[in-house]
Length: 158
Image (cartoon, rainbow, N blue to C red; front, side, top):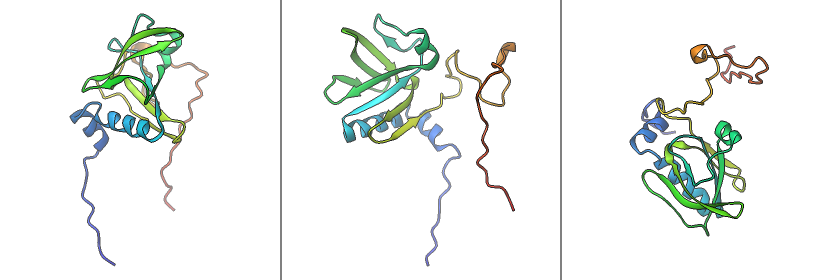
């Protein structure tokens, strides 16, 4: 049996990667899924940087984000700042731009895979939810009927 040395990576490698190359990891995952099955879904959060033509966001999309589908037959580009494309809603085309930092989920039902990215500290949208265990800012309270269940996956010592 040989011994293997494991090098210590930065404590938060994912966050390090996201800061050093904004959107790079998301772009890689996006294209890997797209090339594997021909389509990929993203969820973009509402922000001033997201442009969805003249359509904009509905009230529900402002709260939960908008789901957009991209496939290999569409014309779009992803540069250092985000995705640019003309997307059709109903029968109306809309020029769209989604900044990489506002893409919070990339997923593929065919691959049964998803990538979820937490907002980078300091870039959270103003309507972001307060994490469990923290006090809401400015006296705002969580609804009493909140259905959040806190789960601890740490192994118990015997």
